[in-house]
Image: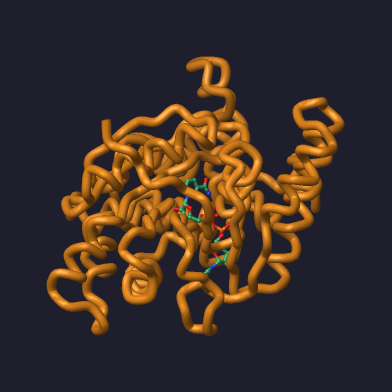
Length: 314
Ligand SMILES: NC(=O)c1ccc[n+]([C@@H]2O[C@H](COP(=O)([O-])OP(=O)(O)OC[C@H]3O[C@@H](n4cnc5c(N)ncnc54)[C@H](O)[C@@H]3O)[C@@H](O)[C@H]2O)c1
């Protein structure tokens, strides 16, 4: 039996809704200390506030003792910056795993992985929470830094892997693991072990646009938006059809609001551009809503409207 190199320290890059949730399961369940990085100081401070309130809720519901919550709080430190090395030593080179959760924009992630590949030792796993972007391309980028020779570049690509959590991370019990073409077996095993330490069931998908979940889910959401756009039914009736007719816990438009309409559009664009198949063309209404700044629950308005606490108002 091979002994896997342990995960003793982590870093999460991006403190949005997914980054915060990933930080929570890393600190609370895997009990691994971490830094969480975001360029926006307001996002970072609101993520830390939300983290504290998640811990208080756990204590009030007797899911954690006060002592466990205090320990979990002391394991997380917010750092302003993009964690990619632009700001000196914001990412320490003793982290065993990085999980990137920045916006679903290929150029942004490719640039970050190139920098991380250059600055971090080859034993650090470079994980991406991407919903759809090619892990193989991220791995190639991590191996392409100017500071790396040919052999170092190959090794750097081998530690890249997709580690795809579901929203909201503290509640959803699944993580999808997506090895790139270049990923080594030991990276796969370490990432699986980390997913289990975060108390998740682990599935494996090969590296194909949208992997398992979003290859199926996002076209369904896109179709639901097209049904709304064609005036076939109201948003409420579309959602009720899925809740009561198919026993989904929430309808596709409510789910799109939860995911973030900007993220849905970015995923659908990746599916469209990577496959070249016109069936993935994003719904016109989705494009317009994102243009209007209506990005769903996180922005207060999407197919429904939300108050400051994220409760539906209509
Ligand atoms: N929302 C979901 O339901 C969901 C589910 C699974 C996976 N994902 C994936 O997770 C990733 C993040 O999604 P999200 O919903 O948390 O988005 P989000 O918009 O809530 O958060 C993204 C965060 O990244 C920060 N950011 C931007 N550029 C950065 C950089 N260069 N370095 C560090 N931080 C940067 C932003 O300030 C923002 O806080 C995406 O790849 C998305 O596809 C999302």
